[in-house]
Length: 244
Image (cartoon, rainbow, N blue to C red; front, side, top):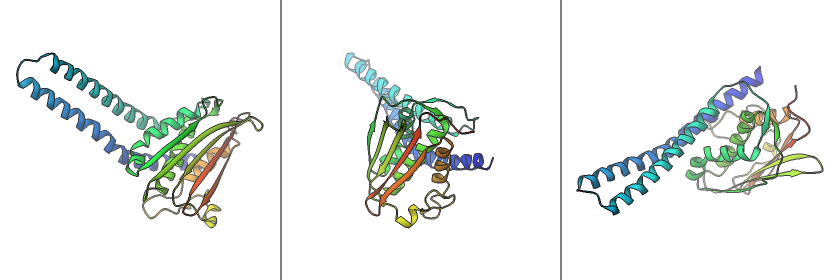
């Protein structure tokens, strides 16, 4: 019960950061759509429409449709992430979870001038587990990487692959940020430990991630050099579903 409460508290903290970030991403296409509508009204007010104007309108409508679809996907993903539903175990496509988490964090990454470099193996097997929990893992790792690079920008790298010998799916999440000292690496997965300045986090994220991965019989490790960046390695066994 305590673990479930921590999961929910961490998810709500992530949702608050996301909501603040995507406000700008939603405002931009809305402004664009309003500008196009104003342009269409102005052109219509100038007189009868010719073939050139009709072609322009078609391109404007296509743009508005694209932007409206993007807004809809952002809102749908936010609502899905915020929903407090019973955890259901099913076959999960980790690459799709990663792509969805990157989509939700797109504005956060763009604001912080962070490039994304992905190498997602399309042949990795599906993993048995909760899609909601795996998304929470990726949301935490991506937002932590973004915060490690927020002052200077950098590159977020995400890789997935399947180790045949150990029969594990591996997710590597790397950044070129500030790095983590050896002393702090030892405490990184402890509840309420945080290196973030006041107001930036309560130190639940990585302890929650650690707890989820442990439930699946998996493992998470970190390698880091101060000033050079960090890489988190998540290993999930394929022959072992969620414990309990």
